[in-house]
Image 1 (tube, rainbow, N blue to C red):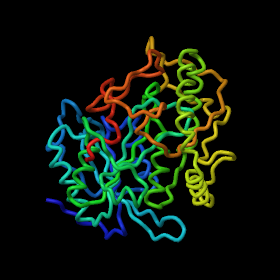
Image 2: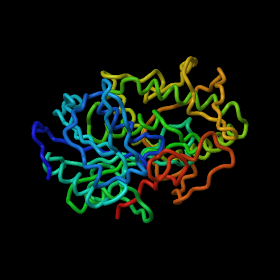
Image 3: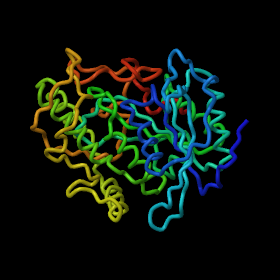
Length: 382
């Protein structure tokens, strides 16, 4: 039974969801929801019963001390509400319901029904599920982000892609399908994370998801230190690639393929969309000179930082960063995460290069080790 005592009446609420695990390469999606909760000081009002949905041998509880008293935190999914204080100029205030947790181990249909029960009680107008996947995309280019929906009308009115995916899916696909059957407008946003540097965190992919979310719900999102973190992340990967000629050559091949595939998309309409975004953000958080998304690579930005997420593929040891770094475009603007750098749609188990600058990524269950890749962003939608 859902009890919502103490939850105030919300204004045009939108539910934003993200789940750790199979659908969360580089922790980009869950980090995006965590950023919203932190910046807007979300208030937790509910949590799903961990006994119903989680295998504690897969997602183990943690023990911690609070003033000498031992306490246990159980893996679960929590819901919080944030008051945003208003959207872009000329738009009314809009509240958000944030859903953040771990992909459940069992009873997915009951899990989705419980989430939808909260959405119904709170008067949620739309559900947006965030996800990230590993792909053949270079870290030096804007992060591709695709918006997917199963609703043809929604796809047309909000400039989204209508999914045609068939294959294995995760909780993101199942929740979106449940929303569709329940008559709740639902969208999933997917960011592509370079598979050769897959370890979390990936602030550049997180930033790209938030930029696309901002456009979708017409709400200015405070970015805090995220743009600086994204610049530092890109410089760290630049330095690692500079140490290994094979990795550098592979990244260059991805860049060439990506640039070739993107040429037809450099239309007047695409340029106009980027300029409109710049105008919307100009008064609040202006981009750096010459960078529409404000992510220019700045020399010395990573001095004193620990590049521990970049590891030697042969020994597993952290490799020291070199001071020299390229000045690349790290703008987190949206693209097509469903296609790799060659313009082809990814297979369920895409082939990896022989040389890698990182592990293969998150496991299918708890995201703590090598495992299957996140599904194609089209999954679960019919």
